[in-house]
Every structure is written in structure tokens, then in C-alpha cells.
Image (cartoon, rainbow, N blue to C red; front, side):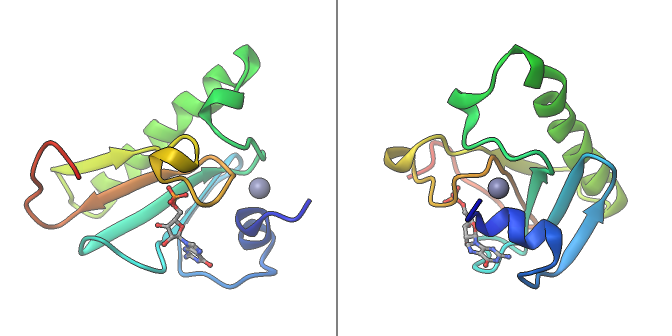
Length: 111
Ligand code: 5GP
Ligand code: ZN
């Protein structure tokens, strides 16, 4: 499958790795929007949240646990977690990813 994030997991495309375990992989975003901008992805390829099925429930939930561990390890207490679903919402890479952004004040609502 021709997927950029699958290639990052396999090492075919280089990245700045932040975290890895059996099911998850995390790396710095190439175009950071905050001092901390990390992408957490499941190793299993799922295009987007709306393509997940019941069996993916635990896997997608675990993304948030992995993100919370990464932030704890980086002593980051306040941060924003974002998942874009679909091109109209800003998704450009079709392999589920959780954005962690932190290290600066953030406004709400987002643009
Ligand atoms: P999306 O817009 O799909 O929610 O997020 C995709 C993210 O992947 C963007 O923030 C973009 O900067 C990041 N990105 C795209 N290509 C690469 C890459 O080759 N390496 C890394 N580390 N990040 C990438
Ligand atoms: Zn993929």
C-alpha cells in the first residue's frame, strides 16, 4: 500500500521518532504548528476515523493513552489533541493520526 505513514513506520521514509511500542508509533510533524507537534499513529493502517470499525475501538482508544504517556514523559501538562477526518476537515495523509500540539498558548475556537 502506498501510504506515507506506513513507510515512516517501516523506516522507508525517515522521521524524528519520539515513541514506539507494539501498536503505536510517534514522530515530530515535519511542519510544526507549535513548539511541540507530534503525530501519534497506530501501526495498523486505517484510512481515517470514519473507516474504523468496532474491532478498532481499543486500538484507537490506545492512541490517546500513548499520547498522554508521551506528554507526561515530556512534562507537557496542557496540550491540544486533534484528529482531522476527511479532506474537508484538513486531512492530507490518509492513515489515522492524532496530532499533539503544545508548548504555547492556544485559542479556541480554532480556524
Ligand atoms: P493532516 O493534515 O492529515 O491532519 O496531518 C498530516 C500531517 O503530516 C501534517 O501536519 C504534515 O505536516 C505532516 N506530514 C506530512 N508529510 C510528512 C512527512 O513526510 N514527515 C513528517 N514527519 N510529517 C509529515
Ligand atoms: Zn498507512
